[in-house]
Amino acid sequence: MEQLVIASNNSGKIAEIRSMLSQLQLLSLQDIGYTHELAEPYHTFEENALAKAAAISAFSGKNVFSDDSGLCINAMNGAPGVDSAHYSGSRNDEQNLQKVLDGLTSQPDRSAYYKAVVCLIWEGETWFFEGICRGSIATEQQGDNGFGYDPIFMPDGYDQTFGELPLTVKNKISHRGQAIRKMVAFIEERMAIK
Ligand code: IMP
Image (cartoon, rainbow, N blue to C red; front, side, top):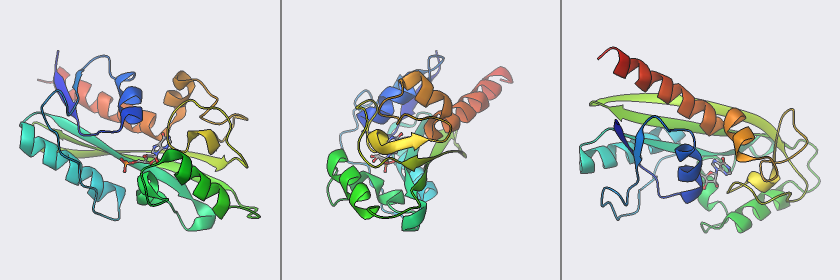
């Protein structure tokens, strides 16, 4: 089976991606012996995704992909955006989502979207795949499925948050699900024409 390294230490993300990638052998950073933090120093998802994938490609010499993603709130000019993982100043999901809820008190426009940019380095070439999932921010936490901002994110067309919806439903419509499916279709095409 073809191997692919995932350049992430985020266990929530890895669990979601693993459930969508049965046709490839997914290797974690632990599997390849990479023990450092992965830097995300830039102001766009694309640059951060490329930085992470390039670092792991250089380290391992294997095919690798990364996901850089975040929650963008329209009334907050796209914040927390690339700062989603540490919006409150620390990598704490509960504090991060509380800061979002506090920031939207008495704000009528609660529309938001999740964005994911996947960067794939496949046989030395670099490719990007994107997914966007639109929705709105609930007034309080609902459910404890998923990770990050899921208990307060209600996708358009549903009356439950990603914290309440099963992972199978989230994967069908989520930003990451869309981006990963595009990447898988690309890899399958590449492998078929070999
Ligand atoms: P990064 O891509 O590692 O910089 O971090 C992405 C951050 O965005 C996560 O730590 C979460 O805070 C947030 N995020 C991205 N995707 C999701 C999701 O599917 N559910 C909930 N939070 C997410």
